[in-house]
Length: 201
Image (tube, rainbow, N blue to C red; front, side, top):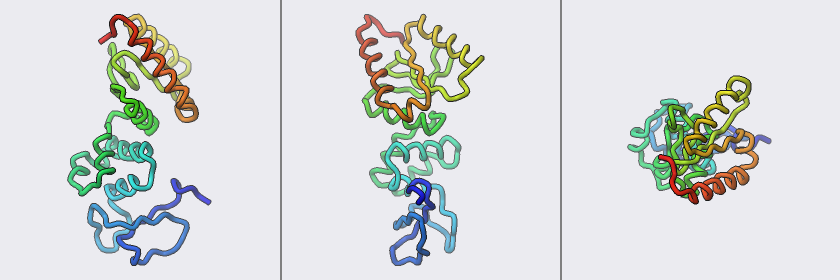
């Protein structure tokens, strides 16, 4: 049987509405953005609201950030809707700088640790995935970080190091499957950086 994340989702205003039974998830709620009669495909903004109710917070945040990043909707358009507290919180937490869903997850997890985080920051003329506490660089590598790309990564890490920054480079697989260890490395590095007489930046 498909999981709730991949099963089709439909929406209806009230439980009295006629919905054909099947292997789908049905959301009973009045739409935030009014639908036209007999409209089959819902507005994206309504879909985002239902995602906020249906998905764990970091998954919902990734969906919302993806919609904003692709220009499928805007922060201003969403802000005009009658959002509830959870939906408003998601909108406030959204960043338009995450390059992928994975980076959305990481940004959310880092901010939940009460850290100062800048996603897609420019440091010494290079863009880095995350700059944490103005001194620690977190880079998340996909499968393409090999050959010439790896050489460029190594050179960038060395340049950051000689300018006082510490870089932690992990794979997307590590983020997905062993986040506690990644978090441990980040917090350990920050503890060591705070012991320095002076931080860069």
